[in-house]
Length: 58
Image (cartoon, rainbow, N blue to C red; front, side, top):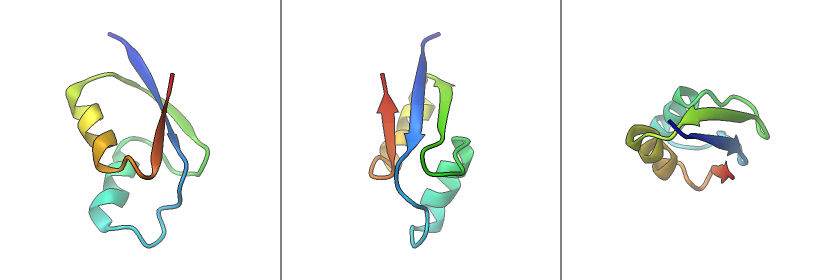
């Protein structure tokens, strides 16, 4: 399965609780942190929900 890298680029402060939980579920805690996840529809949906806070690195 292919992997994608996800980077947190904006703060969680002042964001809706559901978005903060989504970012936490992706495994991101600090700005600039990068995690590698399997490229599945579920992960893509999570990224889509918080796309204004995260960046997908190729």
